Image (cartoon, rainbow, N blue to C red; front, top):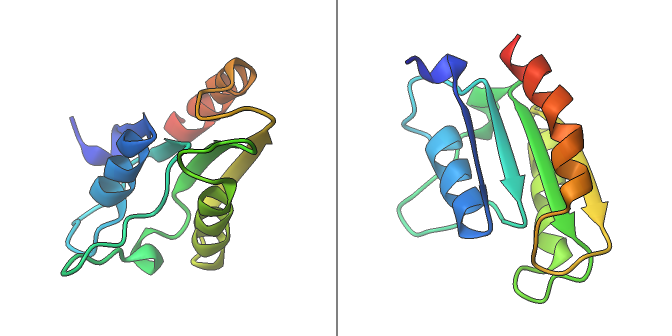
Length: 117
């Protein structure tokens, strides 16, 4: 299956891995979309993201405002950096800790349909 018809996503470290897989500078194409729940954009020595090359890619970010593991500032930073680079960011903060908001999962059904259409 082509990456252009694939949605990548994950929670916590899984979202970091999804960002890396989808947005690394050496990727030949972009995914259909990216879901990042309670994660952050990776910053690793000798690894670079190329956000500009992935303009228009839909990204859904969800993060808890009470997350003690990966603070909310990481989600907000990802939102701002991705939007500034031209990615299509949907963002939701929820009053939860380091977990997934079931209400956001319900909203993501429609987001998935749009991203895959």
